[in-house]
Length: 208
Image (tube, rainbow, N blue to C red; front, top):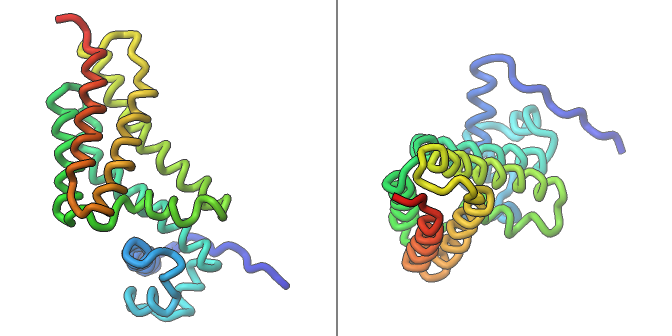
């Protein structure tokens, strides 16, 4: 059986807009119904395109799902970028915590993390998805680590602080907290996980 060549990136504004609309529609459907529960006809109807347009921009459903992973990663980072870029004080750290909690609270904890949900569904059985999701989580962790690095540079945290480990801990608190928020439909566990992680970070505060 012949294998289709990977589609080239659209070269026109209209083409890019169409592709972006398809990815955004697929991302919303996969977030709500999972990858397995999202069909090509459903994406086609949600995006207002034809099936031939979908296959013009994407080789198959796996190719579209890769684009969704990239879209969700970019969306999360762009939404949090203003705070992550200034994560250089205790106040900024707590403000970032409040943004994460408020986003979950607006949905009563429902939905969970878009990347976390995709990881739970795909990572065990699809190496390509696991690699893409790991890269997305790595980018998120790196953005947090950069903020903690700034706290070291500003003298807020001690120079020997392991900011890489702390960034992993914060991200793990977010992911675990969102899973429990999804099950419990409240943000109590998410708030507790983040508050404990932040308290641990403050144990590394430099002497006044």
